[in-house]
Length: 68
Image (cartoon, rainbow, N blue to C red; front, side):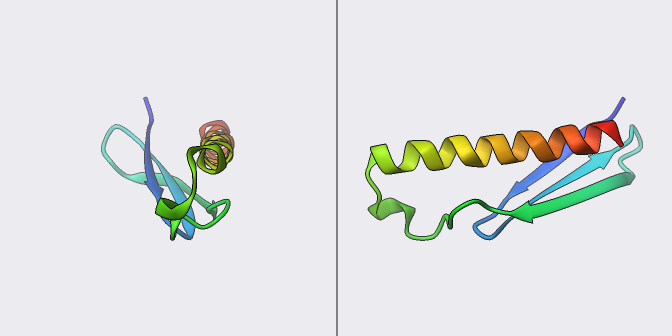
């Protein structure tokens, strides 16, 4: 069994794949789509597409690491 650890940062998304013993066996990172800084000033209509893109980016990186 494997586990994924996800760090969603304002500038990068980092995901690590670990084994049952907690040893990191794969790691990947990508820039966070859009900047999460100053997101409080955005309307809900502006935030929703950003959230969808961030979730899609996290899912794609997760799948890539799972296949490794």
